Length: 178
Image 1 (cartoon, helix red, strand yellow):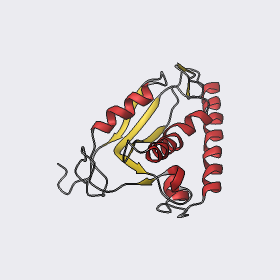
Image 2 (cartoon, rainbow, N blue to C red):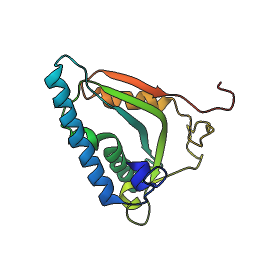
Image 3 (tube, rainbow, N blue to C red):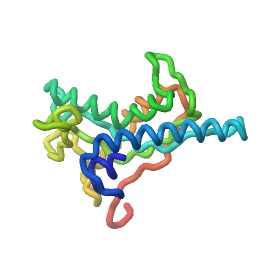
Image 4 (cartoon, helix red, strand yellow):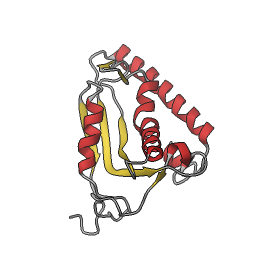
């Protein structure tokens, strides 16, 4: 949804289609809940989940409130919203776990976020591509930061759901596969 309706990098190649992106997320959540119910109705012991492209999202400057708000908002939209829509998100310290038997994680990088001046970056934040972060990793062939420490942060977050976690994708793009 992010790449197709907000960034315009994947089909349908739309940029900043916020309302359409929200409708797509809602429809995907409804489809997941119906599919979960149908699968469990036919095969109750089946394990049902989905692969989530998780990003470790951090404020560019943790000392700035606007950066922290932008990072928290982006984290909520990209890493929590769908789980809440399918009624599987955390409820305080207690996990609900309805409509999901496990969480599959695709992790490749982190995103440092700073607040922007216009909507939506003022709330959603703008990715900071500068290498001024003290713990910046190297850059992969695809231009994303290699940041293995972020995988631990992502796993820690999703462990809070109280469900088994499967790492379904992880890696780095290199010229020589090393």
